Image (cartoon, rainbow, N blue to C red):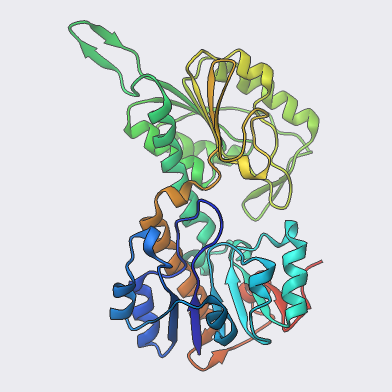
Length: 368
């Protein structure tokens, strides 16, 4: 079975779907790997490393797409790229199918099958395939580093002959994988960390990392599922904003991580809240690509509003491309070898991981 790795075409994307080490592992299992020329260059993987791992290198993406049995990517291909795939081929990448219907339709029209890495069920059996967690972990770390770099003061308390510098105060909104890594990173740098999350069960995790939990009173409008918050009411969001707003006023750095799958990100930081923050403080909006948790954030831009620096970096894992690609490659290779071997796919359509992640099968759309 021929597995193809294409160069990512999305703006500011530095990751690649397979690392040379994982290519070597797949080749030993009997897979044939073809890698587009310079596909791994931005992740610091030279073509020579892929060659030494047993991959073929090609500079013709059209030929790669048309001959591949399986196409592996980080980001979903464009509709034009899908149009180059042969009928019966398999695509594995991020798809975010709930908000990308045109892509889903294109896959169906082309007669291919498509698995979405972001739809893999978050169950214990699939932990080694959980690309959302591996990438969010890196994003949480980088969010703190990016925020610290933009902040005009240091994180830890510093006692000097000239006086004592107070530690920075960091407020993190959301205690998922990204939020927990952000807590750990900010604490290691010496900051005072406060954390809000509408899931009360995260309190113990927050406190185990040295963070102070901002207790929110939940109500019946909060819907949870699969480890995510699926829905909240406007009334609850307003109450959350009022409580957390008091902590944000005193914060030097605010990091927001709240996402609702398939929907626009909830607004957690209003313009009025930004106006009350200290001049020179920083917001890192990790949900900016889904509309943003801060109303003033702008996608892939750093702006200053009311004296506050607002960072809207949409692809934080890509700022750590070597690690991000290595982890993604491990995730996607475990997923691939769960679904198939060198002779082809098993197509166990009722198996939980397959059923949860298969979006299109032989031209038929499987999601509503």
